[in-house]
Image 1: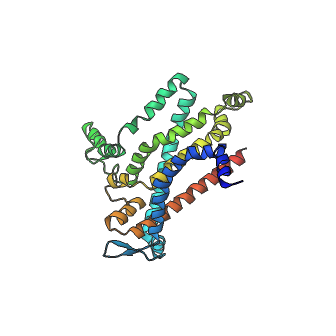
Image 2: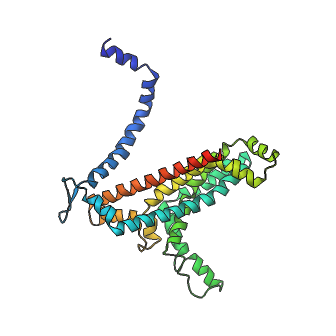
Image 3: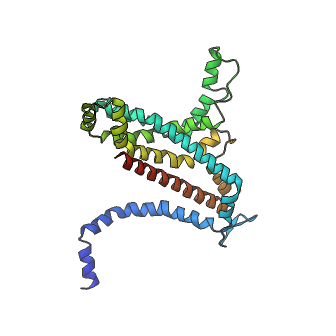
Length: 297
């Protein structure tokens, strides 16, 4: 059988139709995701042309040695992981009751309205929302002005702005819809007869939630955790605006290295290192969660 005949038969198979359908999306992802990532990885092994604002095509691992041994980068990476963990905990803990209420207490014909209301913050720019929180938490912001006008305080509170707490609040608000939606989807898939069976067997509402509802909703919780944790590690707008540039995270350093001092190889190595650390942390969380669900079963 010649090649032309084989190719003609292959083009009539379901596999070819599937490849043809996904090929535009695959090419788009390859062009806009894989190519830039490959470029960053490539640059991370190159040598910076100090003083000449160019990259020298000379392979080296010195950038990674600096990224992993410099105490400044290590401290900023730990701070970024700490802040992202706080944001994730705050977001998921606050999102779960909202998703639970919509799934179990809102009538089916009004659930779409509730979900629509949750997405309203996306109508405005992320940058605008960050600046709004700066106005709310600022030294002369809404909270301080309101408390002073009510006579509760005499001088503006300084501990509610330009700190980690303000960054966590801003990021938690920005990523709340990303956490609510996957948890809601997981809760909607739960067979309500399982909950009724638990109550018929004498379980209290709390034990039924712990032993039935929460384990079945864990896929949504895991999705919410990953959706919030991964991008917040790389957020540099909020720390720069809310933190006033005084509480930099690892993304702020990458931005400074890449665009400020034009050290692309070192910036790329720090970015790749951060990506690997975040990927490892996410994988560990998924494995621990899978083990937890296995024990619960």
